[in-house]
Image 1: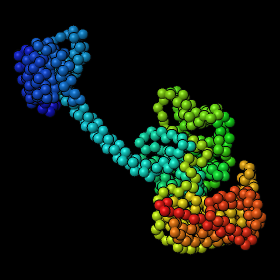
Image 2: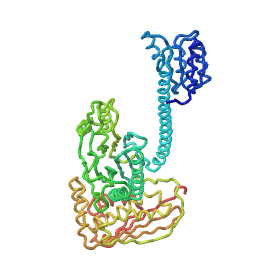
Image 3: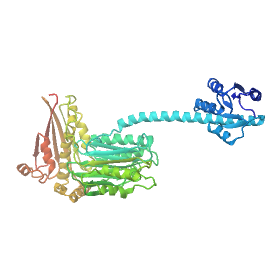
Image 4: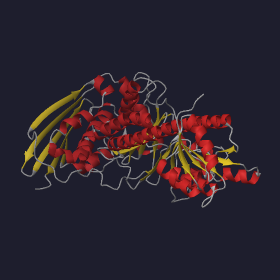
Length: 568
């Protein structure tokens, strides 16, 4: 079988040997370049770029060993076989031929069949090498393009799945991705009336597919939190969206918390994530939140269970959420970190120390030297208000545009009271007045307190003193749910009116419920917050509003909130 025509460099100081070899090669159709010594062989290689070099061992000026070393260096990543031409039989000399870069031997006198076989073998080797090199370059090109595209996609992803308020000094977190895109997603957002929503999710898989699922989670989480939706509503919407877009077998294990700093109430939902801990340094784990639900994106709205677990906390307490990458971290022996080591790290954290730092130290000590097998993510939240003043206006320069003089009424009847949270809708309507938007937090707090008082105390007749103990909190919410389900009749009418003023405006809110009312004259006379009907909520309303008045039998309350333009 003939080989493809090759450019072959022959380096031999014996002219007869060069003549014999050149004749044999040219009859096979190859082109031949000749050199009389090693120095010329190196020069010819540089200028002629042959496919194969036939190199005599013993030559003047530069022997074959040194010429082979220089030729191999000049060839770089290109495969140029070197076949030594030799009559040597010394084993050490032959071995050195291979050590300096030689690929084979051709002994003198030359045998035509042997020469043909070696050229065919090296031709096949070159073709295979060229194929592998081309495929390597193509893979490298496509990998670089994929990385660039993912880097651009990550910029877009980060703009959508922004960290929210994760940079708050009360929050410590770690997102340790195995790829450019993390399979874990960590979100935190301050609620309109203060408080905090936190979500840690873990998608099946890693990289771009997981990031695609994380984008709608982020959009829904931030959008609905800003509008004042409850955690239950947010989780329900996220689950439904993931159920619609994720393929079978892809879902999101998640854990999410609603932290109300004013009431000291923590609500937490855990779907398929490791246990979360409410803990206090020096006292260990106070409350454990184990998974009680399916991950999000597995079942539809009709089977999704958004019920939360509740706990009372103090400002000294902290919440620790982790992904399964923490407990599944392996050491060099293949042993997993596990839940017990995680709990031990939390339980033995010294007073004043950070659980986050304690777990990090334990992980580093345990898994030193082992490659991570999964994304390792965790977050610790100190359960005290964020450093930014609660309810502070978010913009220093509100403008007087949009509708200024208006009034509307909104009435909810029995079925709506049982099934619907009107606060996000009403807040959105109120924020159509642009100048009110910097006051979103205050307006939402006033609206939420007025509506909560009307529903919980006015219609459902719940006693706020139940909230004075953790057991009472649980009983309060049990009674609330039970009485809402049994509610036969009831209504709440809300009247909103906005009036322009010289340096700003006035928002009037009037809320009337169908309940029996309360002795508001006695409350006003005592001016002691916390007695009976509204408890701390009334004290907060009195602090936020310019006026707060009760009417009728105590089932009507009117509040006014004056706002000023900053530039005035």
